[in-house]
Image (cartoon, rainbow, N blue to C red; front, side, top):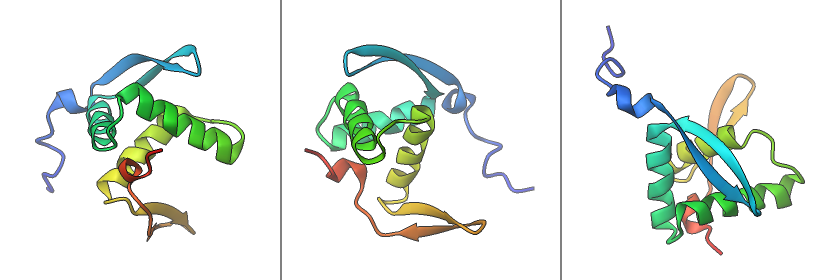
Length: 109
């Protein structure tokens, strides 16, 4: 059996809730611990606080899409993009393809 996941520390996928202020409104975001760790790393690389980085992502999506759907899922995808060295993943007829793009950490204002 492939043991890629069997040795994973349980703490990494333990769900953690954090209160986040977006546009003056406090909301709760629940993510696995590893995603919080990655988001903090991305924010550090962008020279932003975690709250500043989350607010930036929120505003970028709001400006582009006119609404923010599932913010928690968006954050997971942001982490995946970061781990994929900034290359965005695109679903295309049941397969995942990479497109060129910059890492979130390099898209600072």
